[in-house]
Amino acid sequence: MAITDIKEFAHLTEADIESLGRELDAIRLEVEDSRGVRDARYIRRTIRIQRLLELGGRLVLFGSRYRPAWLVGTAMLSVSKIVENMELGHNVMHGQWDWMNDPEIHSMSWEWDQTGPSEHWKRAHNYSHHTFTNIVGMDEDVGFGILRMTRDEPWRPINLLQPVANVILAATFEWGIALHDLTAASELEGTERRQLNSQANKDFARKIFRQVGKDFVLFPALTGPAWKSTLSANASANFVRNLWAYVVIFCGHFPDGAEKFTVEEYENETRHEWYLRQMLGSANFDSGKIMGFMSGNLSYQIEHHLFPDLPSNRYPEIAVKVRALCEKYDLPYTTGSLAKQYLLVLRTIHKLALPDRFLRATADDAPETSSERKFRDAGAAMVETLRTDPVTGQRRGLLSALRSRAEANIARRRR
Image (cartoon, rainbow, N blue to C red):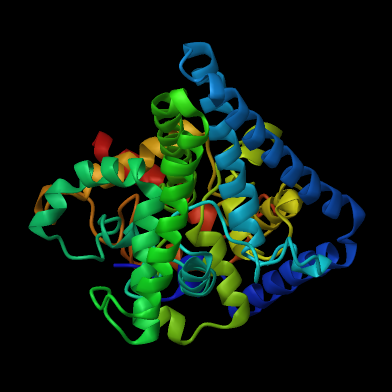
């Protein structure tokens, strides 16, 4: 089952975790104290780029009956929607730029170019997901209520369809997120989704009217005779944005090494243990400046979960320090290429579509689901806390324990 004791799993003592937490606090304070002109220039330049891309794309689509214009206009609009969704909408609504006190670039006023109302998303994501990250039964983002992503969730016959459900979710990701957030908003309001006159449903209907009207009525109509090809271009841009957002989010939350946790672990959690849960429950993927920008710097998902309200353009420099802390405390820093991380996600989706009796690994020692119990099975030596190797002088903790266990499993299979 999921992790019930994060100290035991991480091979850290309470003093180790407090020390790690203080070092992470220092990173936060350093970034907060140094926010300024270059950060403001970055976000304002990003907004200009996004708006110019959208304006240019929509102007080019006036000639969308001609295939080259359709391709150029669709590409520009797709990039515009990705930047608005990932680097602007997601990050602005996290409050990353609230310190500027600019009413246009503020979490309270930003409404993103997506089907779900921003207020719904902020309640479900900023609070629920980032507070209860990967806690089974509390974080509804674990599979988004559609996919079984951990063996802690009991298998149901409908899970056989999750490879198909995954494709549908990827293609319609903005709608999946919007409906997911609507459920959370309805629960907070104390109503049900099918209660049509609830405030949550009214807000949802208003946003749908705005989004559908903009992309599939207003802008196609403005292009006159080219309305059909413009309509297809808008639909294609939304589709591309949905696929990209889906891949980025799934690669940050569901590859091997992104651990799950129990409610019992959360009930006794300290503030610094929350830091540790974010580090162990998230995953990065390798990116350069362009891919980092296009992902809203969510290629640094570990850093984002540690500091969700710090400016996203600072994540690359924060990542260097977080990675150094992982080395210091012998903790895994889960990352890999985008292709590798997504293939691991796909493997989990297809594997967990099957009943547990068809799966070889246990719920305590599987690539996508593990707990501190797997170290107990390996003997007392495996559950020692962070210590210094008497021969090499290196500190040995979770990362060394995981490597030792992997080597033991390989040796066992060769017998």
